[in-house]
Length: 440
Ligand SMILES: NC(=O)c1ccc[n+]([C@@H]2O[C@H](COP(=O)([O-])OP(=O)(O)OC[C@H]3O[C@@H](n4cnc5c(N)ncnc54)[C@H](O)[C@@H]3O)[C@@H](O)[C@H]2O)c1
Ligand SMILES: O=C(O)C[C@H](O)C(=O)O
Ligand SMILES: [Mg+2]
Image (cartoon, rainbow, N blue to C red; front, side, top):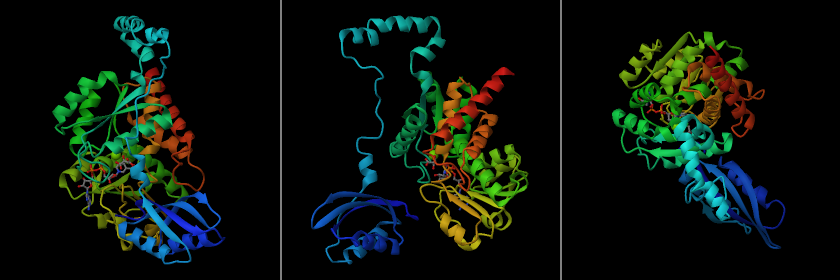
């Protein structure tokens, strides 16, 4: 388990006298535990109970911290350790809700039968009316086969469901889109394409999520060609949009022109290959990439990129390095060159923790928690649906990246995902491109 990825809550009792909470936080800090929210649960005359959210590296690190707090003595003790993340998942994270309440017979007749029959006939006569009289055009299928869930690998679609539900939560809360997870028990491109084609009529767009490479490329390409609605593989293009935005902002900060910088990509799977293609489409002249798999390297060459023999070559020669291998701690601090920009984007654990990369001399460093496709896909789909786009194109994606750059506060690398402006700005930028394309 990597840097700060193990989240737990500590229920701690301290004597109700000033200074005791300070002792606890000091003990946690001395062991490099990262404190999140602190909530006071109960203040008694003798003792106070608080819940402290904690990020640590792994179970052993947690146990070390708990022991250090218990060793403070003087009435300070850890009552229990809870798993807040697991609790948040009880019963799942999404639920289909009606937009109308049924309180009377009149409501029932209006919302359901017999009133609904007329609406069906209206749509039968003019299918376009479904955009107005159903939720289809605001609903996106989140399709996975479970073969590349985050960097956890091929853990299957059911184990990947918490990620799909998470994407649905982000769709709902950031841009008001209904996301419906679709778990496929096949990875065969023919079967995936056939299945998605047969269900697409209930959706305004298709988001492909955590489908491994190389089969993700064929699946996306075929669905884009064969379906009349937008299809986007988030791990490819959502990630590429956000990586481009972060790279543009970081290079502005260090005074480098990205188009003329030497950019290196480690890992040429779904994310890495799309990032390389996006950077070349943006105008980066020297785009190098490497992968353990020779077929992945051949694909990069096919798109006009330069193949590097090893990650060492990338680390030695590139101004900006992006890694999407799914391998934690792959980049060692001694590989970092002074002034490099490092985007180690693998989740849940980065190829190098940003603080380690910065300590080793990087000018900028970020991980996949910060540079995350959450900044791109909600607004991209909102914009595409608003403008009734038939597809998601490169100009729409580049506009989305530039909107993220424009939404970034001074001194930051990317905007905060909870800043609603970023999703609105991305949606507007994408919409604008669709209208321009439609006007041609
Ligand atoms: N931050 C984000 O928004 C974001 C988005 C998408 C993916 N990711 C992360 O990127 C990682 C990869 O995702 P993906 O969908 O591209 O998976 P993938 O399986 O399609 O690609 C991973 C690639 O890395 C290569 N690789 C593995 N070890 C390597 C090494 N030592 N050197 C060079 N290449 C190596 C593999 O051969 C493969 O081609 C995951 O950890 C995922 O969480 C992050
Ligand atoms: O889900 C995320 O946090 C980002 C991305 O889609 C990933 O697969 O890592
Ligand atoms: Mg993903």
